[in-house]
Length: 391
Image (cartoon, rainbow, N blue to C red; front, side, top):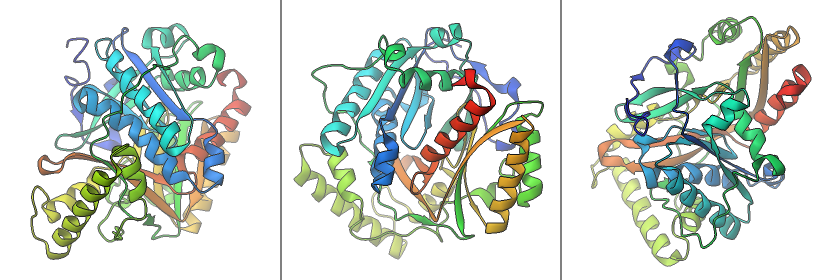
């Protein structure tokens, strides 16, 4: 396996129940870099009702870098108010340039401050962390990276520390518009069928492994989020609602067609009309075959992933929510787990469609009203209480 092609040549797995098998993770080469980005004071934006805009910028980080470098080369994790990618030494300069463009665009268009850094994996290892990756196949040609080793958590701490991040901060001048082709946010929020959309972050911290922790959770839930694929899916056709014009179409036009608003509105409205005609009639229009698209859409979401911790977006009843919270709190008090949770009434979905005709599309799912961003804040508070040195 060549260093530059580490991720593209990495074998994939398709059974999510094995995600906790540590032997399957491979360390990325020492000369790779972590590209980390998140929105400064994202909590203020959430409080102001701007979480969809926050999500859009987080997804734009991934779209810009992946469009520049190619999805097969770049492991990435969406975090709600930002994202993390891992790139080769050969690709890091292009990744910096793409990310610098998103920083500039977020500030000018969304009035949000996005901080970004390119941190050597070797430096994270010197600090005691690691970056180990597995490649999970959602469907043919669509993958998500599962990443362990605490390297991403250390990169996040560096990113938020002005002194520690100074050597790595991305502050390129004379930036160009980032390539955001395929980034869209046209679906209405996905409603909770069982009452509560729960954004949950879980990480073992003691004697138990991740599968053992989730077995305990499953005993309370009545299903295991690691093994029950059908029960965990959120982007089912029965939940999907398409409004015309999409209420967030302005965000898509503002980000993807910056400086070309008229062209952006014309293109987007035409695509929305064609989409409605195709999905209403079942006709294939251009590359869009509705039945195939909806089948793929239900599979190609990131509602389950590992980015140093297990991150889930679940639809739970009130009884399930109370039972899971009690289970995790008991485990936390025993020193066996750190967790963070946020509850809302719906989920948000932001899409990255590279090539719909060739089934290349991924959809980022997060709880509304703060989702993974607020769950992460709660997680870090518990982590600090359990192990102050980890913060």
